Structure formats: structure tokens, C-alpha cells
Length: 391
Image 1 (cartoon, rainbow, N blue to C red):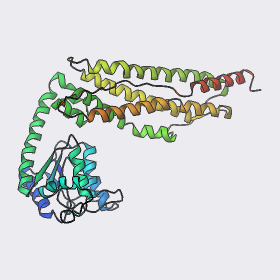
Image 2 (cartoon, one colour):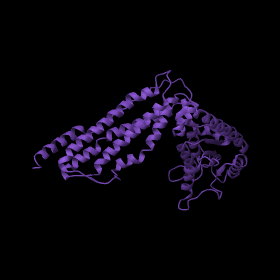
Image 3 (cartoon, rainbow, N blue to C red):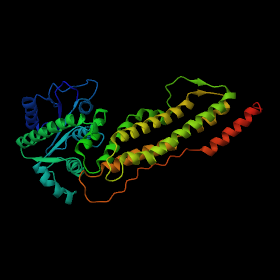
Image 4 (spheres, one colour):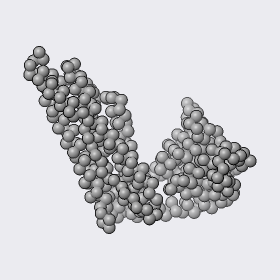
């Protein structure tokens, strides 16, 4: 949300059966808080004329929503080609964006949910338009970090929202206060919202969650570079090297990637442990940010290193060597991707309250360089060829 403008609330639900509730929620936010409210049936709903209703709804969640209100009645609604309703997909987009989400499920549907769970092939057409709505609500309930409220009337929804908005206001004041304290100076470093949340709330295993969130954020920002490597896309000018100098250039470049991989190995297997700290010792938050930024920077340099060879123009005799060099960091990149994803999935699945379960979290990563033997053999072959004057 930009400073100086009112927050924007996106209300997601099926429209026709919940028309009055949607309008009442719109009036609640506008009359009491002067918030902007987005409902697809109103003229104020931003529309790109080149896109359909489905795409416009998702774009508005992605680009404009600061708070997401999901109201579930007894209709699932139109099912898209992706096998989910628009409301379902709007919810998933809001989750991915990391904004506050408030879910309200009608008591009629909520009371029928246990019956459906015990008999999922039963006939519930007297209650819902599609059993997929039970699946949708079940998935939401099964999420550890998503609270679900039930309602009988719009008054229930408004009462809950009033209390929750007070909580948001209190959290905002706490955030402003913490930012001035040296211990929480990292709040001024542009960290992702999820990382800020766990730092402020300090749930169970919060230091690990902080690391997982900042790592995921930094590596998500490198997706375009990873795709460039995956598809061999080069946006730099072509380079030419004389054949006689090529082997020397390659030797220097191989030293670069070796040093990079060794440095990343130290961070994975030593620095992360020092940043998190041993039990009873406070974590060094600035060091955790340092770890994340350094790993992301080195990862990006590995990709740049490989793409350098895509941009080279040399004698055709070196084409196989260029292919080997381009593939050299692939295993290391894959290992890093797997580490970041596994760490995020495992850490964020831990509940915010200690459930008494013992968990072992591996913060190490093994980095290998592919096809080294084949690469060395090819370099040796070409070195002999150069010495013989390519005879």
C-alpha cells in the first residue's frame, strides 16, 4: 500500500446470492473508514478492456488489493479452465501476495462440512451447488496460518472485521515503534511482509521462518535470470576471442566458478548456522539478511558466468567445450533451488505455537560442479591441438 492513499479492500465471493452482503460490506468500509472497496459488479471496479472478467479480477487482486475479504456462502460459482472457481483463484492470488486475508464461511455450509467429509460421494445438492465448495473450504481449514470465521448474517462479518481492523491498527503502531529500535533495524531494509510479520510477532521457530521468507523473496527476484539460463537467452553483445588465447581465458574462468561454489558452500554449511545461533543465543538478523543477499548474488553470478559462454564466438573446434562450460554450474544451481524450496516448505509448515514435536532441519547444501572430468579432457585435447598449430 502506498503512503498517502486509503487502503483498498477486495471483496471476493459469488455475486448474485451474496449481493446484499457484498453491498453492506462495501458501505461498512467506505462509511466507517473511508477505504476503497473493490467489487466486480460496480462501475468503479478497474477493467482492462483487452482482458476478460476472470483476468481482470485476478489482476486487481495482484495490483490493487491491500486487504482481502473472502465470503463463502453455499455456491461455488463458475469453474474456470483451471478447474477452480474465480473466487478460489482470487483467494490463491491474495495468499501469494501476502496481504491480510479474512475468510468468512456461512454456518449452513460449515455445519454440513463434517457430513461431507464422512461421505464425500453423498448428495448435497440441497445445500450447495457443487461439492467443490466443500473441497475449497476444507483446504482453507487445513492451512495452519489461515483463520476462518463463520457467519449467519452480515452483522457477524462486520463485528469480526471491526475487531480485526483494531488489531491491524495496533500492529501498525507496534511496527512503527519497533523500527526505531536498533535490534529491529532490519525492518527498514525492505524485507518481505512475511518476514516482518514473524519478526514482530516472534512465533515458534521465528528465526528460521525469518530466514526462509527472506531467502525465498531474494530468489524469487532471480526467476527471470534462471529462465535466461534454462533457455540459453543472452541479452549481452556477442564476444569474440582468438583461438590462441581461448584456453588461457577458459582456465581463468574455471577458477572463478570454483571460487564461487566454494564460497557458497561456506555460507550454506557455516555462516547460516552462525547467523541463526545456538539455542538460547539470539539470532543475528543483519547476518541472516547478509546470508540471503550473498547467496542470491553468487547464484546470479553463476548464471552470468554460464551465459558468458553463450555470447562467445570462437573457432568451431571449441563448440563442444562451450557446451560443457555452459552446463558446468547446472548441478550447483539445481541444488540451491532445491535447498531454498525445501527450507521454505519445511519451515513455513511449522505451526506458530510449539506443538511439542521434535523437528530436524538441515541447513546444509552440497554443491557439485558437473562434467569436470569430461571438461578437463576436452581442454587438454584442445591444448595439444593448439600447440600443434591445429594440424
